[in-house]
Amino acid sequence: MNDKIALVTGGSRGIGRGICLSLAERGATVIASARNQTALDDLVSEAQKRELPGKIEARSLNVADRDAIGPFVESVTEKYDRVDILVNNAGITRDGLAMSMDDDQFDDVLTTNLRAVFWLIRAVSRTMVRRRYGRIINIGSVSGIMGNPGQVNYAASKAGLIGMTKSLAKELGKRKITCNVVAPGFITTDMTAALSDDLMASVKNIIPLGRIGEVEEVAEVVAFLAGDAASYITGQVLVVDGGLHM
Ligand code: NAP
Image (tube, rainbow, N blue to C red; front, side):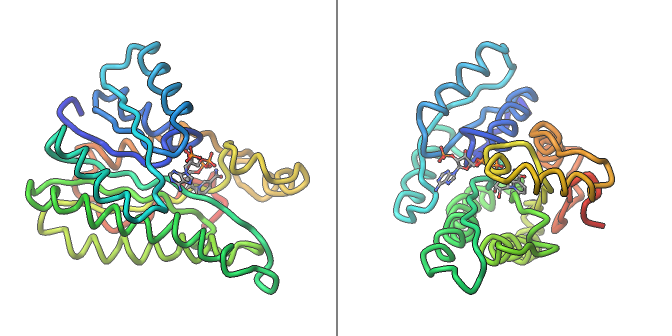
């Protein structure tokens, strides 16, 4: 991936951080974005410490700020001329039962997890179409396939990503741009750290592989889809969940 420019949202922590490191391990130049600049700077130091062949550049972006997306993508393409790989990973949960969920709780999750993905794809795909090359990878969730109590907002956003991705795969395929979803199950990050020990123990019981997944196990699948080996895969949902959903 030595000549590839990758843009990863939510690169400051968890799965996104792992994706940035995986792509840089393969030689890509990675623009890691998130809101927390200090955490992004820490990621850049980590990449330098590991002497990775690629480079990570930190740029803060709040994906929920629609007006920031256009100037952000323009500043990246001004410097690098293009984005070859776009990984829409930034995501939030604001769980609660539907009957007591307020509008903000629903809208905030839909904005960060779904609308922002559309805004970024709209801005970035122009340069991909011009160059007749692109890899778009959206991070979904098994919640968007199976549903999950307490997550009508989150599950709706992640199910929406699947429809969006398949439509884009059909729109952009002739321009040699692939669009896929990676749908993790339960992965050890800050997001799952918020769940109770009892819930995590009961989840482990129903996962055929009997354990929670690690960030690297998702990141490697994203790197595969971003690479040349996946050139004939588009419109797919790749589930990385230890067999939870099948
Ligand atoms: P995490 O540890 O909570 O990290 C979330 C990342 O998203 C952080 O880098 C955060 O950075 C960023 N982010 C959140 N809101 C943002 C915003 N408005 N603008 C820019 N960046 C924002 O979560 P994770 O577990 O790594 O999750 C990553 C993705 O995987 C999400 O899409 C999530 O839905 C999905 N997923 C996770 C699991 C799991 O078990 N962990 C399972 C299925 C799917 P800042 O706070 O610095 O902005």
